[in-house]
Image (tube, rainbow, N blue to C red; front, side):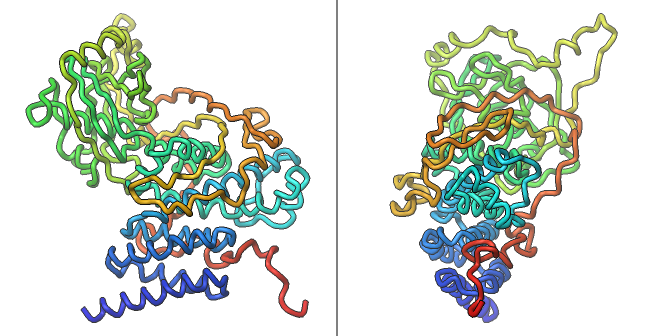
Amino acid sequence: MWKDFYVTEEFRSAFQRVLDTAAAQAPDFPEAVHDVFRLSTQVPHEELGHAMEALAPVLSDCEQAAGIAADLSVLAGALVENGAPAGQVGLEVLRQLGSYGQAAVAFMHAWDKTGGGRLPEPGEVSGTEEKRVEEVLGENAPLATIGWWTSLRYGLAAKAMLSDAGVRAAVRADGGALEGLTQIVHALSIRLHEFVELGELLRMAEVEYLLVLDRASWRGFRVRVDGLGDNFQLQTLLADALVGKEGRRLPGTRPDPRWTAACLDGAADPLADVVTGEWDLVGGNGDWVGNDAAPADIPVVDGERVLVLEPQSLTYSWRAGRRHPRIPGSLEVVDELTADEATAWWSRMHPAGSVRHPQAAGIEREEDGDPRPPLHFGVAAHFAEADPGPSSSQFAALPPELTDPPADPDAFGPGPFGPHTVSEELDDDPPLPEPVPAPTSRSAPEPEPVPAPATRSTPEPEPRETPGAPLLPPLPEGVADSWSWAPSWKWPPPPGQ
């Protein structure tokens, strides 16, 4: 008991030192950050929550000190992973990511316009690179370079913040903010692999309600979902919620409870980790959706995301689990459509049997002498990643009206990178065209369908350690030696030089 008391007091003292040294841009700021990081796993979650509340105004005030703000964001991400609610800090991190991320995209544009070639690693960017992009960006070159320099740290912090259901709900409530941030994150993911997962988490934030129509029973249900990374997870939880007397009495085979647990918040059971599919998943517009897509890929029909559960045209299976293991999934049946409502929706749907699994035709041609066993998508099928191509948009600040968590009206002002200074328009060839003063947003091209592979087609780069994971690793590279307002070449010379 006394040990816990002293650890808590030490944590409070260390955190106060973080706030003081951040405000003063003092040289011992990195040491204070590391002390808080070290102690954060030893104090109650309630204490971490108090720390996050105290951090919110300081993080906002330090935004112009880019290095300090980025490192505070990483520290906040570590506290969230250790159990703190993200709250207002989560929204502030995403807002700053939008501002500095927009600047980083401008740096990428200018780099390609001045000869292209390999981009410098964000932590290695120097005054030489800033001078190069100045040819295109002029007086905006310093800020664009700073945006690139801080990009990875903001990306790491934002992933932790989007693991919080409250932050996802707040982002979902402002479609403009979500769209703008998604475009910036997508543009960065083309060059920085660390942003691919962040883009997936933003897509997770898009969806809350689905209208689900079951072909076999002609019934319909509205369901509320959260934390679902792909439709493998969605189909498993739908089967658990709808099939049999334990659900809503739809015909079919109930999933193994261990599959369901792995899709909610449990670990996959190695003795029951192969899930058997129950339906074909088809959009209400008649397009194939499938399991390797995400809930955000379910098409919108008359204002609702509509999913049709069709009888299987091809037997298939996959591995139990969650695409994003740190994020628990949830699915709740909100209500069932009345008979008249269901009839009205079915009158707008495609005919039965008109949409089939893309690989079903070849399997059913028994006259070709090619009867194949049931398709098994393998261990990593639902971790396959599709690059939807470049896109563009401006980032819109999150609104103060958000209720979960409550927003500070003063926290969502314009970022350091003005909204009309550099274009974010992207083309496929060249990939990053010259910036123009008044960008015109356009939609991202539709992604090419990617069949689920048996294994990953290419080995993925070793992921950068997320803040605070798994227990207490060193802080990500850059926190210990790049805390100041700007990279080292921007620091003022020592006295007397």
